[in-house]
Amino acid sequence: MGENRIAFIGAIIEEPERVQQEFNAVVSSYKSIVRSRSGTPFPEGIAVISIVTMGDIDAINAFTGRLGQIPNVQVKSAISKKTF
Image 1 (spheres, rainbow, N blue to C red):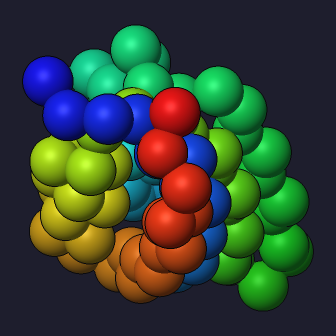
Image 2: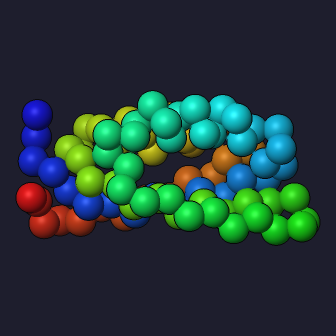
């Protein structure tokens, strides 16, 4: 296992009622690295999710990649250079 890093993952979900179950299942499957999660629903049919993680770079990248494969989900991330 590599050194841990802190990362922020931001996701915009269009039509969340269609994909929130799959999104939540992916987040749950990475619960070992998820430190916090916050969501903001909009009445226009969009939700914005902020997730903070701490884990090795491979796990963070795999998590971000899985979220980005969900239809109607756009994902961006920022990963710390500092390791723990």
